[in-house]
Length: 252
Image 1 (cartoon, one colour):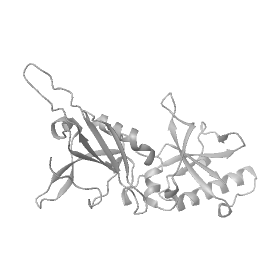
Image 2 (cartoon, helix red, strand yellow):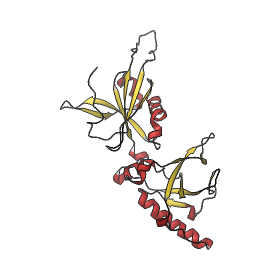
Image 3 (cartoon, helix red, strand yellow):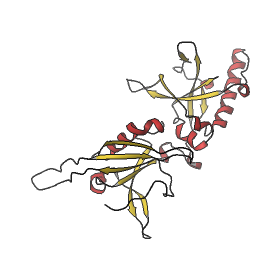
Image 4 (spheres, helix red, strand yellow):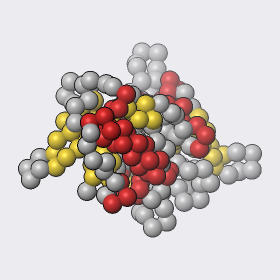
C-alpha cells in the first residue's frame, strides 16, 4: 500500500480523513456482479487548534460515496455538529508531479472505481452549500427564538409565526450575532414597552436545532454551540445554521 498524506502535514485544511483496512477484493466476471468489499474504515478528525486533539472513529468499510459521508457524520459528527451529507465532500489521495500527496476531487459515481479499501479519502467542506470560508460565507435570514430556563425545563419562544422582529441576518461571528441580537431586542422592547436587556451585562449562549422524528426542524431538539465558537470565527461559521433555519439564544 502506498504512503498517504498525513493530516498534520497537509497544507490544505480538512475536516477529516479516512483509512480502510482488512480488505476483501472486488471480483467482477461476465457471470457475476461485483462483490461487496468488506473491511473497516478509520476516520480521523483533525483538531482546529494546536491545543485541541484529533478525534478518531472506526466503521465498517462503506461501499458507496453516500454511505461514506453518512458514516463519517455518524461516528464523528458530535465533534463537528454542523456537518451534514449536503455540506461536505470526499477527496481522494493522489501524488502530484512533484511526488507529493494531494487531495483531489472525485465524482460520487466513481467511488467504487477509484477508492479501494486500504486507501485514504478526506472530508472537506462544500462551501457553496453553506459552510463558509471568507468571502464565500452564505448570507440570508435566520428565524430567531429566545430560550428561558426554569428549574425543570427549557422553553423556546414560538417560531411558527414569522414576522420581521423574529428574523435576523445570518451572523458570521459571535460578535456580529451579539450586535444583531441587541438590535432585535431593542426593537421588540420598544414595540412591547418593555425594558431593554443590556447584552453587555449578560452572558449570551447560542444554539442550533435538529430535525425531529417527522424530519422537520423543531425547537424540540437543540444543540449548544461549542465553547470554541465564541473565540474562533472559523468554528462559529462551521456551526451557525444555514439561512432559513432556526437560531436560538439564551441570556445567562
